[in-house]
Image (spheres, one colour):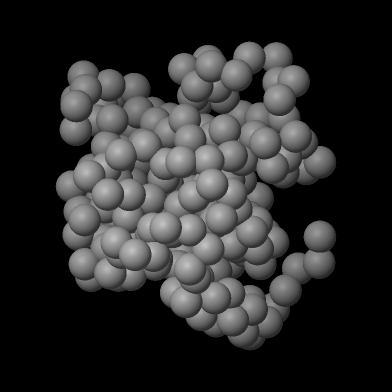
Length: 197
């Protein structure tokens, strides 16, 4: 994959982000306030892929600023990672009404945007957060035959690799809102990312 300069990345992201914000490829555009583009350090070797914007993110057009975002910030801080050092995006770019699960056509509508973001950022390691993002990334890189099986709990915290692309599935920060007992285990998994920065 060709490494783009910072200027080329910014130019490419500007075009892509305009397309994301104008997108009407599925019914979610009828209920959203904003369609969120990715944000963060364009030269980061680490790219997080979350599920979708929450209510606060939808209102303020910013990544990870709601309750999940607060947990995400604490996980990064505990792992010694600065939020400004990573790139973040979503699998589905619009808020899912009432926090429902995404439909396949919604994931497919956003899939080209995510693929383009990965191509532009060209991260050393992609960190899908949660089962939906993990499944989408595994599908993109044709990793269905990974030895751990397709169960998210068996992939969680394992480094997968295909064609020099590392993938490191982690639980979505929202999971800790419901199961805080996994906090220390999750922090340890985040600490592994430090070496890539």
